[in-house]
Length: 325
Ligand SMILES: Nc1ncnc2c1ncn2[C@@H]1O[C@H](COP(=O)(O)OP(=O)(O)OP(=O)(O)O)[C@@H](O)[C@H]1O
Image (cartoon, rainbow, N blue to C red; front, side, top):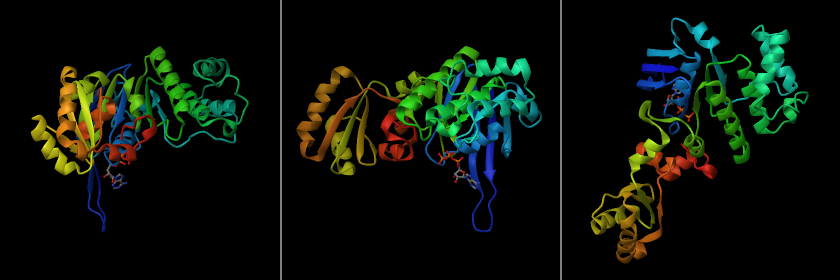
């Protein structure tokens, strides 16, 4: 399990820049065997938190424990039970898949029969079994990421940390990477914390943590997060969102939220929706560019919780699959 208690991190200022608090009093606990996605807009503190969790940065205050090992007093023990997949590749692309895995195993003193067992185990879930003698540079982006994951699995981590591991992958490779990751996570009962910008990746997680400005704004299951928005959402693209927001709120007698050029009316009972849409169109037809009714998704939750506009959320993430930040 991963325990984060009252964590604070301040980047010291210099001559030209003031000190910056990247994490403010953040507490979060990921139970053993759970899959948690960490999301948030750019600059929300995800990378800083990730670096502290892997032991690459020391927090200014607070505590982190990995599988019961305190990162301050038992960092070696914590690292021993942890695997980390970084965003930038950490395998040698000029070496074959097998060579990369053997090199990593050698660093941990794994050899002989044990190496054979662990290689089989680390590759069992993957699509790499026929590609062991191929150089990593000849693999697709998705398969190359699987090499990173297999490398981590050689040491049988109890806790796996992944920093946007699907960045740069096409949607199909991203999906297949996630499928194998979830399969191996479930079968080994690993605790996984993964940062992600992709909403669809978060849908199958056990829990989703949403950060903004160094604070944890929400931490719950995807279903519970969606329930915060309530029932259906009316999404309107307006000619002039500021003007229509006032008019629409008066016409409907409901709260209307504005995010950039978009207006949203949340938690609409499905039976009421036709009447609400008709009233909006009858009174404001010329001011409305488009109108849609939808079931809340995690993207809607993200917009609701962070206050980011859909354009901001999408600009920071990857739009094609519904981005998290
Ligand atoms: N080395 C540093 N020195 C000073 N400030 C920093 C440093 N690294 C990050 N920050 C600041 O700390 C805050 C959090 O940054 P961080 O990179 O952790 O966020 P993030 O959520 O990972 O963003 P992104 O999604 O863009 O990678 C930001 O205000 C950032 O400007």
